[in-house]
Length: 399
Image (tube, rainbow, N blue to C red; front, side):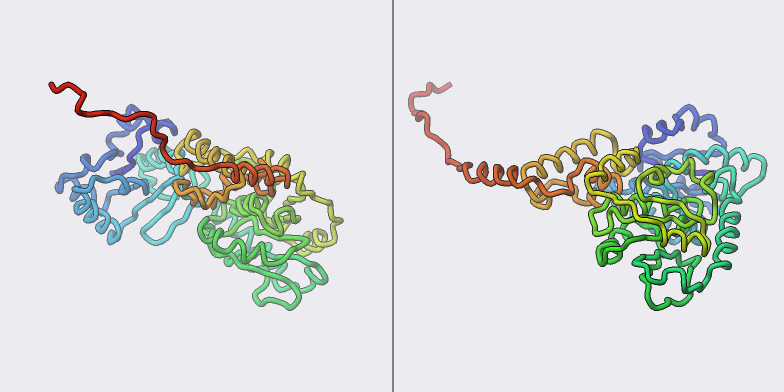
């Protein structure tokens, strides 16, 4: 049996998993929307049976009533110690990962592949890869073979970056160089996690100004997520010394594999190129004539991305309100960190970075606007209360 623990029915409906559809698969799926659905110890004992598949949205445990905390902690501990597979999904997960008894999936991936997984399960073709990768469950093996083949033809060819001011980003799974040759800059990425990328961003992309940045199309837990496209978006949407630097995404596969990717449009922006994972392509890229990419062009180029609001931003209204606050603070010359109720974690998200960059809000306000703000602030004088009249309580008739 599959248990889906998701606290938002509307989230399921968005991906066509309405109550009616869930009910049509009642022999395979038991949905859980509230703690009340699982409060019975007998129900929990049945749910934790080793043959069952547990699928849980990460936000489920965040809004539990205080008097339920003890019970919910017991459930979390049983999940943590469970030897069998547990699948977690949320809007904050952008890349698929599979480790021992835990799988992490984006919301869209889970609900888009769930029906296929169930139908295959009915045919006794029980393979969790259908849930992770969909119909083409062999894609990871195929991509792995292609990357390994390309790597074998290029490894340790030390003359590629001679006399070039380039940064080479490498995947820890398919290193271009086993040992770093002298004379070039290299960083190895071993995670696609947004928090880790944000933590390392300044150290990697704000340390030096480069002429070229080479990014692997595939890195992280899942090759078919093509995380290099997302990283290229991060570079273009984040204020740094290299925001407009030429980006070369080196790939062992053709563009056909990428057409359905959410970040495909980054390849339509100026000075962003897809190249083969080969010696010749690297050399040609380094020798390629530079095209000026002016800061004023950036806004128009980033408008080509057409990113969607991600699930972790709740809805369009939520992100619009947050971005409105950011714009007001920017126009008033106020540091956003001074706004106490603003959710500053959003500043690290790719979607928010994109909104800021394509609207030109990384740039300093014109000096005349800054001067007007200073004059306006100096004119504001906070006055105390003004006494209009007095009330004589003795003259108020008693009831």
